[in-house]
Image (cartoon, rainbow, N blue to C red; front, side, top):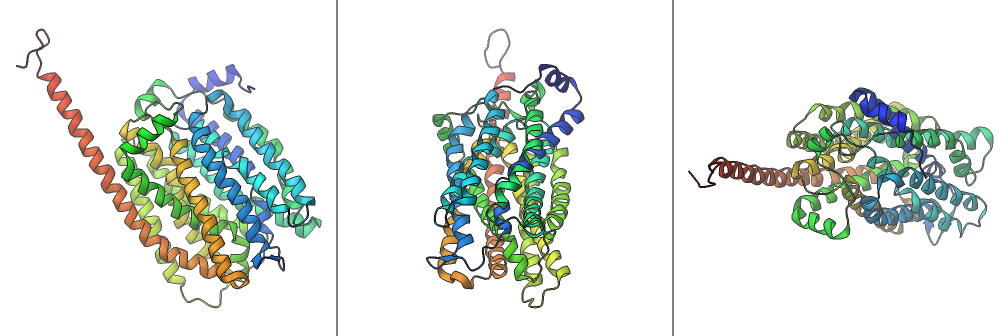
Length: 452
């Protein structure tokens, strides 16, 4: 199935980078923003007084959906890294349609069966990001394009939760029908976004020269690539795991966290995340203007370290607060959100993109993203099961967020230093090899090939 207009695609390819970037940002933002309407709305409900096997019902539902999402990331390591361009748009629509259909039986099934349908909802959605990002990667302006994509998952989460909360509070929609109806509101803009994505032309020759060619990546090539860069990639993935755990707790349990602060306003989700998105995209945009791949990578990693440092400082500043005002809670959630999302967005827009461009190995961003995402989401599932089994109904999500920040931040700062050291060593070796090759070539006489 093709949705491409050759005329529009050609005109975009011939236009200046600003026009192509603006088109791509709107397309990626719209598509991924709408995807969140099929994934996140159910988390705004708290399912109070529903407990099964000593575990809160919301925890069971989250476990089911995140398990499906994590399995999707595992499948995506192969599917996304090997996907050809002509399949992307149809794949996005098919995945989201399957996820939406799963929310219909979820609304009417008995309690014991609902988690199965949320698992089915999460299973296709985990591959949508890779399909969307594949339209953007490997370009000199990939960071700017990807910034729009990343702004969507910051802003969309709060917006669709607010939409779901309003459906329940103002229109009498039940907490189990609310996810299906919220998703239905977003189909039209989703179709527009996917159509716009399909018009984006492939990277130009200048893009390929600057960032290396991105092509389908088979299993043997994936194993070779990882083994050649094992230490650096492993630590990067561990950092992504910690970020995913931190982000998932703040995002999936936002309703419980705000309730713990004593704040109960449906619009608070969208308001806080809007500020976070604006600040994060503004900070992340710094790297867009750096042409040299290693300098951009180094700048990105420094900002990752600073993000974790700010999370630690913010947490310590509010440690011991017992009487939360709405203003203090709002400020804390925005600051911790900015501290968390700056590293998270940089991984999606810059770090993996510049690593591939820097080492010039055959690869694509989808492969690295899905390795990190799978490990991150499966770790989140394991953590939440353990924490809920220990604390059961007495779990304090505000305290959990504080403790995660205190533990994850210093460990991640140390990991950031290891990554910078590792890729600096690889860059030094690579530069030395290129200089030696150049010296050898220039020391040969053009006619005889004998060393002079």
